Image (tube, rainbow, N blue to C red; front, side, top):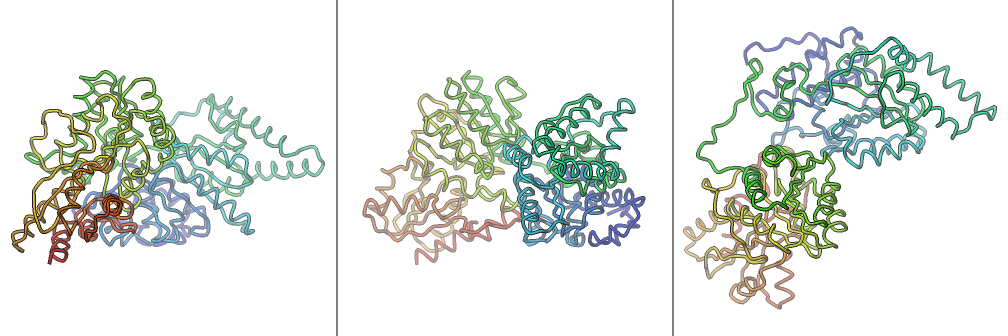
Length: 634
């Protein structure tokens, strides 16, 4: 790389203890070098970019002030933690970030003692950190500090509010840092606001406050309820001076801020001053996502995970996709608009993923009929159920692994009432570099037992369009359509919209020596393996596309059970309890006794890597399926 950055300080920082040897006046230079190091690495090894640039100063200040790893820092999500990885012994290995066999995409306790909790899904930091704070108190570890860092986006998740509610009533000394990057930093209005802030974060003020409260408790003048009332009163005074309200005022949680999250020296001072305060605390920071890299500051959404780019000009290197099949997500987005234009009952719902799932196409065309509800998957499903109850047809698009968080909502608020919610599960199967927290492995297994559900998976783009059309027809009830991240196989994807009979599979080719049953896009990989196996072995192999996991095409399965003694099932979901298990149950229930083998995601949490590498690892690529067929048929 041209103009390789020169680091005066970062090269000597291998762990936070090295950082803590520096003078506070050197921290801005450390931040500049750390930011440049992140840019240098991510321009050629893509990952989550803008969020980590926005937390550079916070990361440096936290590791400078706190005695990590003894003190616990709990990150929310982990998109923002690349600087944390670099400062905690992984700078040399950071070039392997998100690569197969390399360091993990998100903080993980299995990788480093500095990573205190798994954080692939949003909104869990407050609950996890509160648990750690209570555990420290129970064990008498009075010197251990616990800090949760949560973004303003993650604060929309219900779990965050549950954690806050519990933190407000449970004895603890937790510090919650709210990283707010959605607004510009307001100027201080008048001297009183700054005076009050400096006063309430100073050591002298807080020592005096603590001694006074302890004396009043001993004299019987102050009790716990009065203490909470005083905190609420103090928060109210600060809110009046700051001319803004905050949600924490009535929760007995001390509130500090908002402050500039990019002033590392002041941030370190504030963290030091409030570190030993008793009781739960909120520190509100204003930060800029993509800070220090102009293109990312201006277009933070596009630079969330931008791929490869020129670190000098900011030019993104986008592959030429002309003549290639479209992404399943794009087909979903355009088809949804097409359906909505014809059916006024249709609306779209997404929990904070409009561009990722292509719901943004409907938002641009019909903004009044598309709803981004924030990082709140459970709410997204129940909200959709409420609309369906009163006659709307919501297409609720949720990434498969995130749908796990809305399981009860699907049962209680949709399935029991047999409501017509079309649940589109994007990112089904192995998603690649985001790893085990993001793989869509479990949806078929966890949804299959729920009554009233139709569960389907299209083999290609035409099937996706037809399933979407079918799902919005009258009286279909709750309808699940699952499909993977990435491209399909059909370049000319704009087929006529036709109904597919619910529960109807299809025989793609006949054969005598083996029956292969697939569901979803992995059927295309299986078809190639079957063709090679027939050519190399001189055998004939039948291939069936099941289409529907629920209801099963019993007529098709009876045909298979009567004719074939060898059956191979192939699915891109967890092998325990999925499609193969459903076929085994059917065969046993109907007293067919074939030899049946299953290919699917093994009963492990699959690591990160490219999609191709992971499917090969699991024996689910063309070579793996071919090998299995050869072993089975001979």
